[in-house]
Amino acid sequence: MRLTKQTNYAVRMLMYCAANGEKLSRIPEIARAYGVSELFLFKILQPLTRAGIIETVRGRNGGVRLPKPAAEITLFDVVRVTEDSFAMAECFEAGEIECPLVDSCGLNAALRKALNAFFEVLQQYTIDDLVKARPQIGMLLGLENAVARQPAA
Image (cartoon, rainbow, N blue to C red; front, side):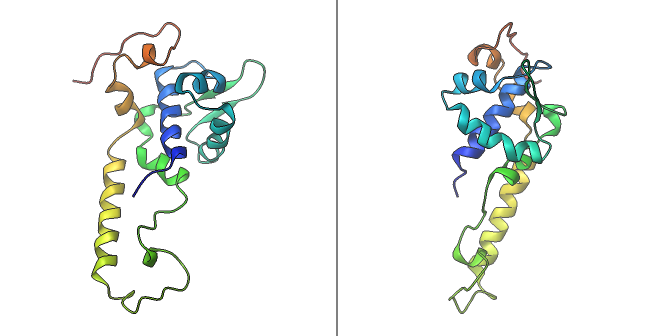
């Protein structure tokens, strides 16, 4: 299983916002920090906003920010809204399946168990965990007045 580029940059956008603290983050600055297009980030922004994972502030001095502490946003929260499908095999998909074992297959059960374990691990990590793992993140992202964070104890 491979996560999409959309999920990857959604997590990065949230990390940027978390590292920026209470200040509003602007899409052009985030795009520049990661070397991606603003259009791509705006596309990612829509599902995150609908899910309440990121908040937008309109206007000349607008931007984006986290609506709640980064410690309350799990990786699972992000993956759940940015990935289109978690079908690891044909039998996970809806529709006609040609395999005669679909209802009693050991592979299906094993893959479902693996997917659930994957989700459980993602629920254990927050955006705050990722930011705290890199004490120099603000400086690495070019944030103004960035102060190195102390590593988690």
